[in-house]
Image 1 (cartoon, rainbow, N blue to C red):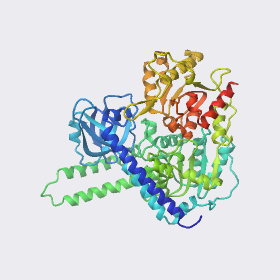
Image 2: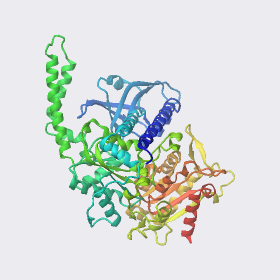
Image 3: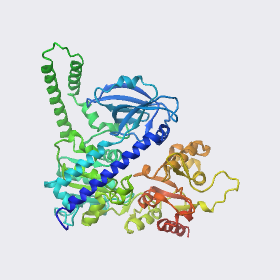
Image 4: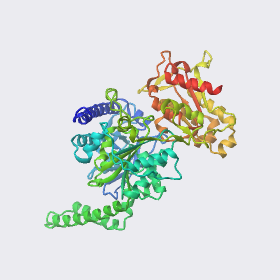
Length: 635
């Protein structure tokens, strides 16, 4: 390291870039709210309109909550999830195109969403009667100030950090060797050699270790094992991830292994199993909770019916409040005392419930998808950090192009992989894909180090099938009077890209493949399919077409259509990818983000079908190599 201030300067630079990203996103949000029209926001899944209000009540955390029910557009996938801020609005005329939108001055927070029902917490004293009597009421996502504030504060703490936090900051930005314990390797009979090595590396790390898990290599299995082993040596660990979904996934796997998990925040899939380990449910289920509820009710009643002449009002109030606080602390101490794993999102780790808590180890899953600033939020509570993920898959989302170019998209995981390769274990055996699907990704992204487990190497649906095919749309001749073409086009106010002829061909290609497999076998074996397009507008077009396509009626439950990001962490027997781009200039836009394509092509277990205009796509060297690779498979 050149001088003592360089890690500090690097973090100050990050702070400036984060401020730039904040300004960009806030401005984009303002424009979207003011200009794109509510109908567009509803279609994008960022708003529900119209909605009906249900009951309002105080939840177990003593927050005022109101139920909201979506009454229209129920098949649109939405972006509401726990912890996201929302605002309420009304629309004065009957349609969303020519209308006056009035916003309420209440910011709420999503508590949880279950299908078309959402629970939103609002500040005490919010005028709920106005909401409950409003006509044409809607709710939309609001700009998330809190996450940015927490990330800024975390960077400030790291910049000023002394003690352990300062030590980790300097270590991550220098070539200084991370410290390790020395002990002979432990053996885990149900892990493969590289998974076993990764768990041993985690146990030996005093400062930091990285589990680098390419697609299908059992990263979660390895991480769960490492957490279990850490709990043999420590009383409690903190487990975080960027998204609620990733936190749910790892929490569920830990619970399945009999580990007591306390999940701060609500899960994205609302079912009894997932809810049973949330803090809110556990709090409500505590034997002392009814007594606390009675005390809180007494406090609200006392405040609501305060008599001018009551001289003992303050005395009564203070007495009730101190009893309630005492009970709350007692319940919390028991819940946190019993839990072995505290699980939350990175931002959620700033929750006041964790105030004053310290942990030996922080595990960050999907670390390659998190901005570095978010990783510093939980870091102040711990003495060592274990990161798991794959920096060759989806990167964090950065909206500001200037901030991205200046390095905001570089994650803490990438930085540590560069600075401290000795702290990284690459998992090398994959259990998902036919070997020929996996091999291209292995050579292009992982120096050919990832190999297939013997039992998946030759997996396929049909005998003698070629596991990867690329249907070149430029080879198809359409009749001269055709209304559609294989050229991409823009739609809507946000200029989403679609390719109508390619969408049609995508479903035809799947239909042909289904005919080869046979209807009965598809249903009996529940063969599942993912249709992926990098473009959201194409995804929506394909979904509409699938709903109308008679042939697919019996199989609809087995087919899901989504963007690459929507398939993160998932897998299917068959994957079909519609590339969309087709133009004379060879422009492929954000398909140049090769990490995204790595995710798309590695979702398939047995069959991958790509549809794309070869002339447009293969001007880029990656797609030229992919085309060549698939051609060679055909022999």
